[in-house]
Image 1: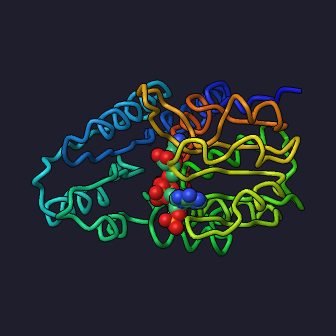
Image 2: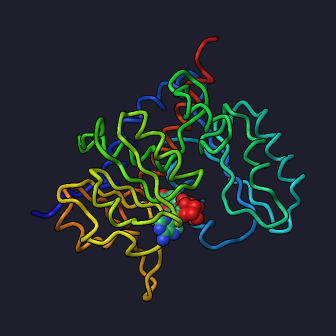
Length: 289
Ligand code: NAP
């Protein structure tokens, strides 16, 4: 039987609709949510990502502002912009598009963003809040990509508690927070990376596989347990320049129970979660003390 599709395009459209009353309430109170996007340099992929994010804001009624800076911008100049945005009460979220030019330390930039506005969820304090379960208590934000994966799994009613989840990739932005989110939902989690021995055997044991590597065909059909849920975070270009994930989609869909496509899977969910975090930030800022 062919796997059910984890359709990120359809789910993100639904989630954006559900956000609309929350945005209306904030706007009626004179506190519409606002996102500031900072783009340093002219990396073509970054320009597309930023354009998509700004457009997504406009579609749901979130005010956005784009701050473009040249590729020769100094770290101090970027930190000045962030300091200004931190104090701007009309800005609820600050997103600095990565990667940054080599003269700028990304960690220093991320840590300069006020935790209340860290809608990407990359700040050390957001990471700590995720680890200690404090986010729902109002501290920090969930990183958008793994958060989007969790929402996809929940929407499809994929059982998580007690499941064995194998996360391939251990980056701070995807793999590690993904593993923590699955753990918080009582999955038994295995994290794999480039030094993992016997990757195929580990993946074969998984009820849930999340591939976040950046290498096409990392997960092939012979590695997947029948009826497993397979989520593909990867974004790669094949020889013809077509966007593909880390999973061998056409073969794996014949084995898996659920599978997310690339494009149309995790990508649109990541943007939806950025909007969701921005609305959450505005709600927190508008709430009485
Ligand atoms: P990253 O920082 O490069 O991390 C990749 C991870 O994969 C690393 O932990 C690396 O291990 C591991 N890895 C590399 N080769 C491996 C192998 N042969 N076997 C097992 N693990 C291996 O990348 P990232 O930022 O996490 O992103 C991962 C992918 O997701 C990329 O394709 C990226 O474009 C995509 N992405 C998509 C979205 C979206 O919205 N759809 C968002 C973010 C990222 P080591 O730690 O040992 O090096």
